[in-house]
Image 1: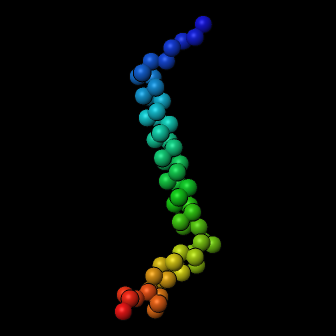
Image 2: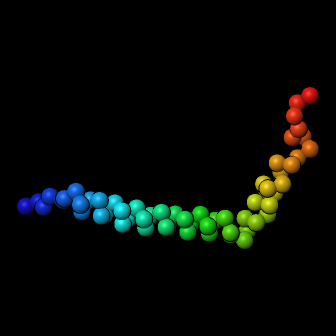
Image 3: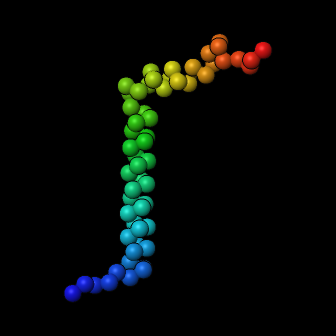
Length: 58
C-alpha cells in the first residue's frame, strides 16, 4: 500500500532541505574563501588586473 504525498508535504520538504542546502553551500564557500593557504592566490588575483599590459589598444 502506497501513501500518496500531498503537495503541501512536497513544498515543506523542498523549503526545508533547500534552506539547509543553501546554508551548507554558503558555509563551504566562506571556508574556501577564508582558508589560510588560499590567501596568496587571492591577493595575486586582486592585483593582476592592474598589470602594465592591460591598457586600451592604441
